[in-house]
Image (cartoon, rainbow, N blue to C red):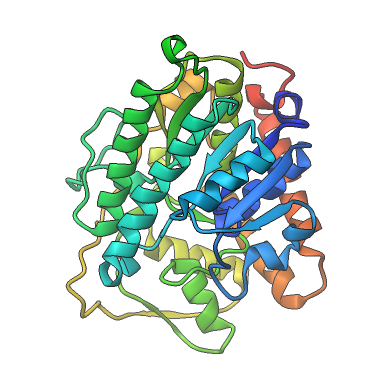
Length: 371
């Protein structure tokens, strides 16, 4: 794994939300890199759950705790003295934020405050990557991708909570970290990713999981917004960005306080209709029908990200084509549902495949040093 292995090997890395879809894949990747992974999460977010399916708990230190619980979180910092933090714990579902707005704000804003406050009072932390969302931007439904300097906003509780989390991160970065006057050398940055898909995602109200729940029960999938576009990407795409960003923060303070988008190439953003039809091709069967939502819950229909900053500064770019993204996702779920594979090993093989593809494309993060 080149430079990432050298940087993360033997580092103690705390992941909040490690039982979630992205968090579980990040835990596997960091374990592969030789890091000592500490996971902090309050519950298993779905049934099945990727964390359990891949038996990740036997390979890392799993701590049960709520990111809203500052005292327990502080105890974890005291006991394990992490070098690096990846903060992914969140209430991540837009539709749930309508029924549980307080939970959403408490978790996504208060949880971010708690993790940053722990980093502040434990100055031994070297780097922190705070994960928010592409939905942190004020969405005006324009065609081009949002840049990191565009206005933050949100018409729903989830989006607004992520915009607020960005402001909290910025305030802590400017006030408390990488500051010689108060003897704090911690570097932090935020990461904003688009919609991720991949094996092991069974979260409710997400396109691929909803389709699989229907098809594995011989039912037709119900789709409410087939023409909505999203920056779909395989889960490993933003995770490679998070790892590169974390590595840069470990070796240099030049990116402290910055924010980065991680998403697919703008020209391959696809509609929900395109996503489902492509997945059916690799899954082998399945059908869907359009039923407009009777709810007045507002969701954006057009959302793109510009990743020019990550490309220019981090030398990061997407590795997989849209077709490869769909194929790998279908392959993973087929392996799970046939029951003939060790899903941890199968997932590690996908990480290795992704890394090999990046090496074929001569991306710096698979080399021996950053360029």
